[in-house]
Amino acid sequence: MAGLVLCEPTELYNILNQVTKLSRLTEPNYLCLLDVRSKREYDESHVITARRVKKRANEYLLPESVDLECVKYCVVYDNNTSTLEIALGGEDRDSTEDRRHELVPGAAVECGRALAHLTHHPICILKGGYERFSATYHFLRTQKIIWMPQELDAFQPYPVEIIPGKIYLGNFRQACDPKIQKDLKIKAHVNVSMETGPFFVDDSDKLLHIKIEDSLEANIFPFLRHLCHFLEIHLRLGSVILVFSTLGISRSCAAALAFLMHWKEQTLKRSFRLLNGGAFWLLLGARELRPCQGSKGTYSNSLDRDRRRGWRPVTANPVRPALVRPRAVPSHSTRRWRPAPRGGTAFA
Image (tube, rainbow, N blue to C red; front, side, top):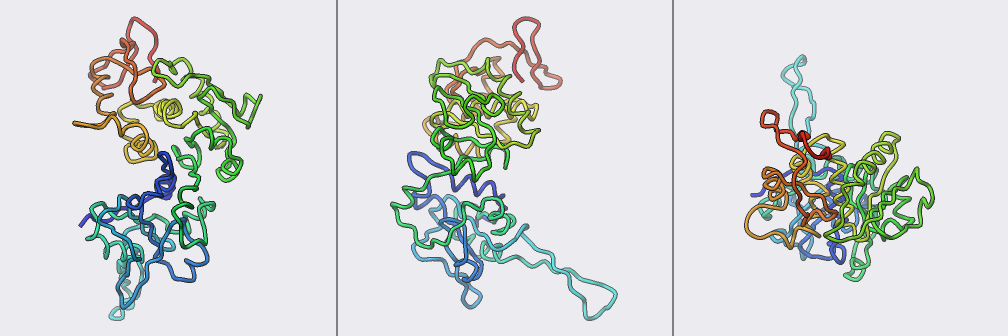
């Protein structure tokens, strides 16, 4: 039995919007999204690609053609379950002074437990249920029940969330889509490519255009200080920012990771550890790291080894960075990187 885990709305949002050449929703073994609400509520609206789970004689009946054993993500949601157990208060008939609290699982948890023995991966219970998800991502609601393969092929994913509701990571096509700008309430762009987008043209307050080639020799390091300053100002103003490059898989990823290191005041290792289960890691895993996986560990582990040896990555491509001699030396007492007596100041 794989067990149950809570799934934040931003995690489901990012799962729905993963893409390789086409949307990953086209893959039959990628996502199984189950709705355990009533038929009336399901028919009124539900999350895209969700299937309703029927209940008969206290047993949950899976939709036909669903093979949970092969599915990577199985997400179950009801109306508003927020924990794996819900506390309900009631009076004890034997005592009018004491109150007892029974722990009763919600419908999503109950269904998840019934299906857990069928999966190899943990079943995800959507935290806050449909009410919370639809309030945040109303544009992912639908009344459509049957999805044809060509309709899934034509589905246009949204940018993934890096900081929920604040920073998104996408590609040039998404940056040019007015519907995406409206749905996500984008107020500023960071364009890390040679192309020029249609939004915020000649408005330096809302557009930061870092013109850099998509090549292994490109050096994004000189732009990082300005990039972090731009993003930090807009976060404090409450603006929603889209960071993008041509394909959304190289230069923009490096920019987003650099800002997280600056914003959280942490090392590259800790930033990767923070993002291992998040949108950034999902994106890199689907698009960038797949060719680099082989024997042991991941790209983040190799970067950690390089840092211990005194090397640092400086290229726009976070997958195969060019390594240069260090400008910083490690402090063994605090395990933080401090500027060396010689050389320039290392970015932090």
